[in-house]
Length: 225
Image (cartoon, rainbow, N blue to C red; front, side, top):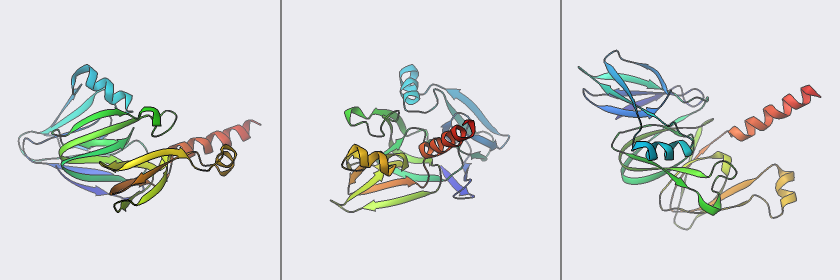
């Protein structure tokens, strides 16, 4: 899958160039435009249970498959929120994405949900991670710009849960309160954070959807009062 990312980081657009017969799978509703020779098909990849697992991970129940027919083709994709798009080429590796961050991938990649367990990785409603495995390219989106932070072996780094987009396999992590006490956590405006331990790479987004929702609620509430 060959792609270029335009208009970064505020209103990114992924332009995927497909060779004759080449396919790409994408989130339902992500298509902006495409060549007239590209054929679109919707399917439940992995059957009902596989589709259900993806939907629990915040993705669409159905996926869209695009294939270039009778020559090369071009496909433009974009996420629902303004922000950045990242691209990662996997070579038999595993990459974890937060719910809602997956945009498109090579069909050879396996995309499955993974329960965050008792740790509640993202807190509240974000208990699901998407596990992307195999060889091929994956496109993922963020609200705001994407910032990559590489950790050396044993290095620790703390990230607000609302700003995590994805991370590479093999990293250790623990979820905890941002401050020592609940009062400090509440008063500081910070909730749960994740402390990663390297080696590996973390992909962060510079804005948080939860912060946006809280900002809108506060403005709506003040106007009502």
